[in-house]
Image (cartoon, rainbow, N blue to C red; front, top):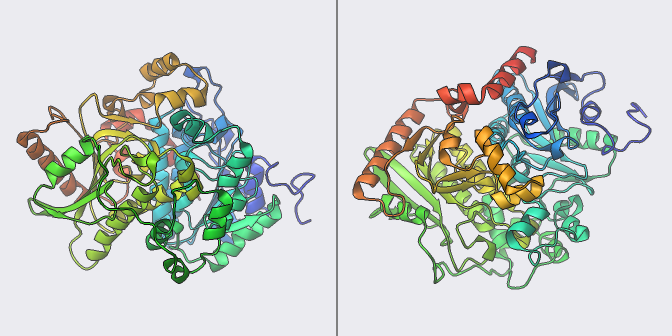
Length: 569
């Protein structure tokens, strides 16, 4: 054996640092922002949680096959690998530095070792914003070099970081690894034990374990729990993978796959493997029978803020077909600006019943991606229209079928499309009129150049419902409310979210349920101002850290990036 890291070759048994050393060329490991820098989360101690001096993320520079590389390893043993302000800034900042290297002609590779439950709930919207910045960096970096993700341990990869995995150029998994947007306990909390029994570990692994994800094409390599095999798999991917290839950009392929599914009866993991495991070529997929739904919205559908504002803002404008009633789109003219508006709305007839109340589900994510990418393609040789995401999403769909079929990949497709449009020169504006929760907001809104929100008690921004947050963190609801008083990022109201500096504007005095003509004029004026501002600014998300509010409330996000710049070379 060339290197003996422990008495066994097991990758899972290695620490986060040892995993990084195992993947990088021997002797090339150099850690940035190591524990002796003592940049730790200040938000944990005040909640009775002992912080860790590296905040659970190892960032290492080195080489892979002699080429410069940065490797980020998440320590699943600290807070379940949860992403907070400091840890999120370390990941996003490292990817941003790799992007800068590649833009400067230095061919730097990036590898993510993910053992994470997603956002660290004790830091709420700090983690949500950081993960959106991670997503943005992956999409931008992927144009230069493949971004490789490794999911190997027993914790797996969940939440917004599963969307990050779905954005990567390639995913390597072991049988022990899991890749899933919503944790089993959260699904049980939100949908009931009849939907998914979180104690049924055999079922959980059969849905989202490495073997199943590889078998149905949601992972690229299945390897044994052996660090040498994982190291070799990383090198093999870089030798054959095109830089901008990604599963999240294969919209037509996955829309075709979903259209062939008959979900009238509960689909089993084995049945899905038998179906999708045979679908290696698009022509085979197109030959299968289609079980597409009727495109007329179901009866009993209540109005929602998202639908209300979409209809008022796009009245008398050209509707853009999306293929499903729960995703609305229209091309409008605001002043001199061409605008494509997109909203996710409730649909009582949605064939995926867990997505009937305005959630972003399997169909919704891929349809959003299709709608956005069509605008990018249509404007390839002309002025880039603005894209407005009208946000009123109570969360992603929590369901068995959603996880089995890869809702994380659907959300990744939507986030990818918005980020791709932004990088192509399209101003992307998010207009929050209601709920902006969790993975749904990451997919539909958080990749925007500018975010506008109504100043209203019904506008909520957070990682997950309070009930689920209490169950996951094993705290009482009263404790969550107490934390929100001390840490704005854990609160649910839009005013608290505004203190984090990500909002471009908050609109006061708008009637959210029955907007007047004056309200619509005010919103249109705000959209035009935001579009003009976005056109004059860089196409990345850096503006979110430049506001006066961010300078104060996200000072550690800024400090981490500054330290990474200082230590990079």
